[in-house]
Length: 187
Image (tube, rainbow, N blue to C red; front, side):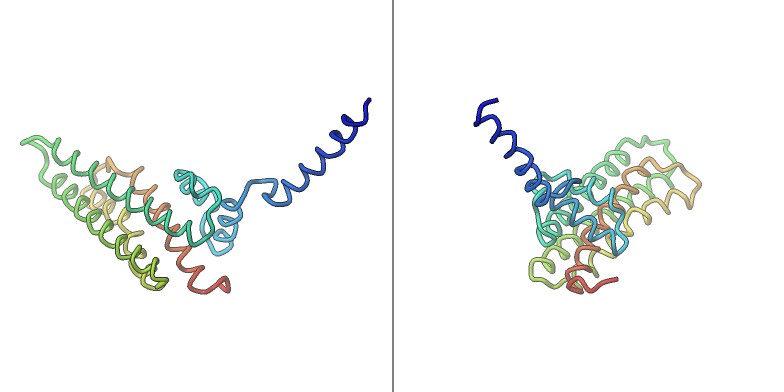
């Protein structure tokens, strides 16, 4: 073995060890931040899975993840609102009026969720984390409120999956705002 291949053979393990020490065996800053948030009750897998939808989250700090999660929540609310509106528009003349009313309510609920998320973003940007928490606590309930309308009339909700996913998504900025507000002294 020549001298350059021996030094290359010795350097590779050192570089690998340094890389793993900076990024951890299980990933980078996203995973580390989600572990931090999991310590105060946010499900780790939900955090990582939802935030990975935005490639910027990979190396974002908690503040940046807060903004990313707020924007993802707003986009998700807009998607569900549009889906509920399409379901409402697809109802024929003979459709049960109760289903139409529940879908109208869901459209309105998600309209309000978008507005409240916009308020949450404004508060977050100005570092008014308690304002973000106030806005987002109502937003997080949107999916359950929409589902309750279907349950009330014993209908199977066509939005169950979306509503459940929305709750998980909306919990992320709520938890981040809580963590940033208490500056890591949360338990």
